[in-house]
Image 1 (cartoon, rainbow, N blue to C red):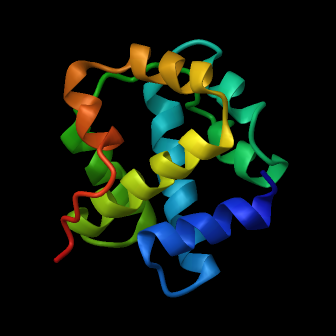
Image 2 (tube, one colour; image 1 turned 60 degrees about the horizontal axis):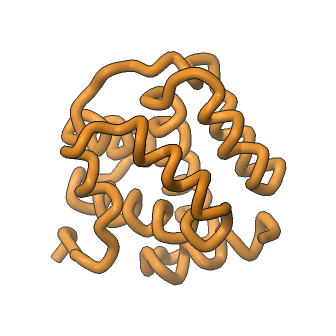
Length: 131
């Protein structure tokens, strides 16, 4: 999947007004995910994404395996994206849903295996929390 296609799909899935908003939601979600993953998992995911998007997974704290709850995950996405938490939850879920289309099933299984059970909320597309 190419960069523009992935961002367009995030924009559509998250019902965002602009491609810039979709880019911001994607960046906020992937940077936060990279902080939570340990070892080379963020790089493994990055290797299956378009270059510009892959860079969001290569932040200074990528692969450090920081331990924070799913609530803190959504708080971090909210701060990075500059939206309230319910919108951040909705947008992060949209980004994750598009990742399922963009990368191999094995890679998504590897990511889920690194996250505690409470992170199942991140992988639940379709539940709108912004209304």
